[in-house]
Image (cartoon, rainbow, N blue to C red; front, side, top):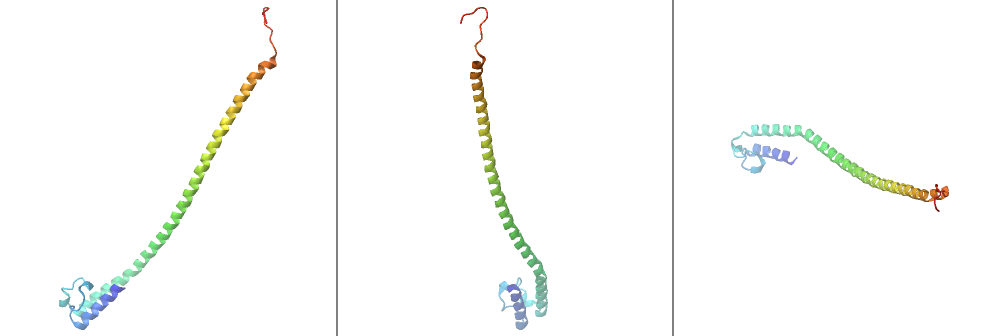
Length: 139
């Protein structure tokens, strides 16, 4: 808005003074040729520039609204990403715990099979009784 005001003030100064020497050089792009410009033409040119800028304003406001919506969406997606990463870390810990439990179970099962085999290996010969040796062998 300040640019629009400065353009309007420049046009007004050109009309009132008849020359652009009293205007700041930063206000216009071509201040050297402003003294030779007809004030009516300058006003019309400034009016056209003003109209063009006013015509651009809705598109710029729409762009600002889209940028704000994208920033909000970005914040939401960052939050979702953090939630999913936390869930993934929890699942990885649970998976590691289940693997440890499975290994322990296999170890216990193997130890039980070994113990049963050892026990049967020691008890079965005792349950058979003594064999008699053939051919008159010595006892």
